[in-house]
Length: 120
Image 1 (tube, one colour):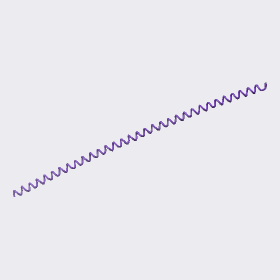
Image 2: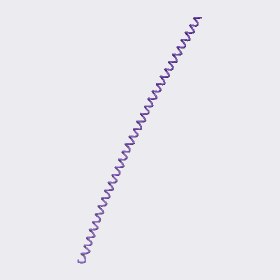
Image 3: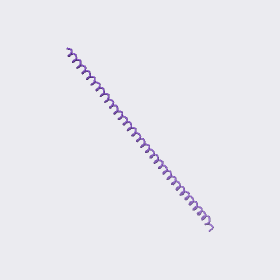
Image 4: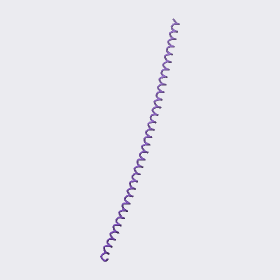
């Protein structure tokens, strides 16, 4: 009977040790998997955040460049329009002054001829 008791005790002890070791290994595995998963998730999140930030920065830069180009184009068109308007106005003014001078000269010459003609 003593042998039986010792055998049962040994079996129970071995079983308890095995169960404990299995539990420890299982808990360790679960913790490791959780840590790996968390790390991977963090890395993916950081990568996504960096990517989104880069995309937003790129879009902002492109938008800024587009705005600058648009403003430059508008200013250029405005300057060209103003220049053309100024040139046209100047030419018109010169032509008008020339016409007025010509009409005045013709009038003076005609007047002179008319005044001189009775005496002839």
